Image (cartoon, rainbow, N blue to C red; front, top):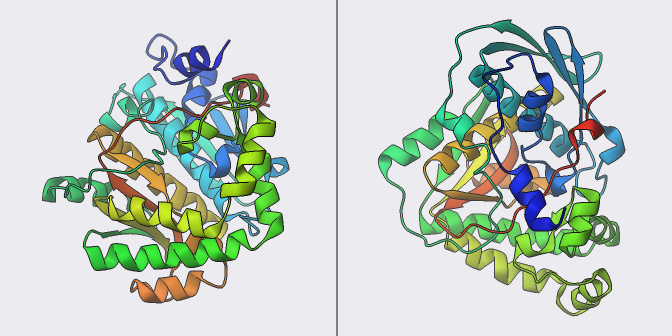
Length: 335
């Protein structure tokens, strides 16, 4: 298939009601979740009345994610989609962390099928890396987003005024300065960029260039162009515009800094992003302040959550739909 055909095939609802025990259908929905650099670092082990969601450590990003925080948050994102799809299929999923695998075990029992607004929004959610219109969100929208982003030991802080956005933009700039100065980070990022549709279709993963506003070009040309434009200064200008065009900034943070809470933070992010999509809103990550280890506690103090771990940062607003990322075949992630 070409890129457009793959997008149509990937980002759609599938059949669930006729086959509640078709766990492959549930896994397909799980893989539509977010993951750092679209690495899709998950493995699904299918058993009788159970799915294990396991980390795929071969898809680590040690430069941007040295403690594997984002990897485990991605497992939480996938698990949240899995549970929503199971509910729509007539299954109740009981989820628990399994310390022996550092993954999640989801046990199923039959229940009345319930198709939720968050489930319906799964094919709509995307990281829209564009400028938004800056229009304020209503009190009802903010309340729904706030509720979606809370979990067990995990909370969400929503910031909407200009001074708060400016503070976040300052820390994003500090993060960019640190990351762009790290050659290993730059090499890792470039290795996950898919500069054109052919590359994206072939790999089924990674960051599709046009999804970030860049043209679809051959890899050699994309790398050549990056030599002239790839800099903290240029990224800071872009991020400043994007942040101040947003209606709100959300920071998801945990009471305890450990793998179960990182996974829970991913689940909370996924619910919040799906709730935003259900409201017709766009979201995009701006995680630089939580990816640079020395900045993370400083950022936490600056936004009033000292002693907690800020897990994920995203901006929210109304904006255009961007080109879509792709996903690997289901057979590649099932064991």
